[in-house]
Image 1 (cartoon, rainbow, N blue to C red):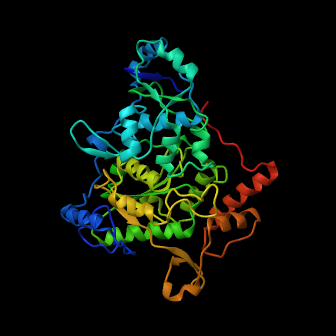
Image 2 (cartoon, rainbow, N blue to C red):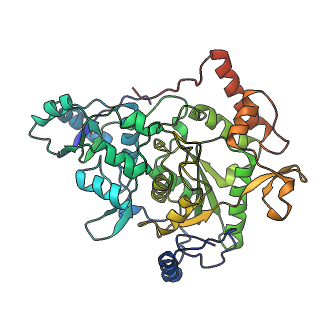
Image 3 (cartoon, helix red, strand yellow):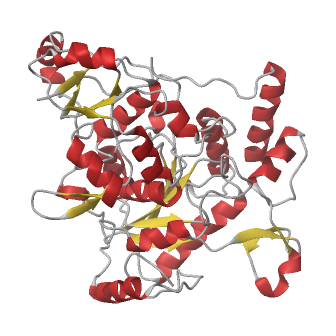
Length: 450
């Protein structure tokens, strides 16, 4: 397929390589396998750049057609075969159109799909390797394939191996995987790939488009602020003071290393999430309160929405989260316990080992340029009345407030301990759960592109 033209409606101590000045940022030690240890040592001569990191492939991909050519392209698209897109398809289209998946220029062809499934990376024409751990594909059914297949302009249709895709991405084919059930199990039996041209920038008209900065726009903003280091924090939950402690402490340590103006990219996920996660609109309202209450400094924090859907694929998906932030200009990535993980959909246990995500990031192909910063564990210090880094020598002084516990308190309109979350942010969370009880729904519907 030469191109895919789609008009959008206006809706919807361990690092990837060691630091050169000090490894005081690292609060935990990890025993590497011998191969990983030798690889880490070989990277010891690499240096961290005190500037925005180059995007994967050396150039940021932007697939939105320039305004001067849109009329011509819309006329051309009128004669092309059409594919019906789901809300999640549109989210991946958004991701591709702005270059989050650079150097991808469209939905994956079969060779790209197979490399992603089996190697978590893509080999470029010049022999270099970039990370790509999750498939970005477009499924079509038998009827659509028959209609499209008659077109001489379409040739890149291949079989959709659903079981293999699920098994390789999640490490299990157990029923109950949220993304798989939403976007794969009942999807079409074929995949269609090729270069993409997007006729209109994606807009959701939900009041949050001002937060949806593309990688190009983020780089422009970070350069405007004079950032000499950018550290990204990925989250899909409300920000509590433990998160804020991790972020502010990271900036302090970067300053101690000699950076002059490290900027935090607070980057909540904005695509598909499972039903019990707090919806994006409420999370963004809560994040704004965190800034208003001074928990994070607005001068050194950029808040933006990452448009990707959430797969809950643990160590596989966290590579995608890290790689996309390279394209946005981040050269440091904060990773915590069980990143992108979830409970096993059938058994009463976590689906992934809590430490595997950060270990995988330290070894992942194509992420060598990105500095990985593991979390220090934060908990509520009862002796100080605030969130603090956990001290195992006085473990009895600390209270761990899980996400389940936090949601339970908010649902029951109970207050957490003083110092757990800023009052304005907590009120937003209580209001959200209060709205659910008033509506009688398990979750309020969110606007999605149509």
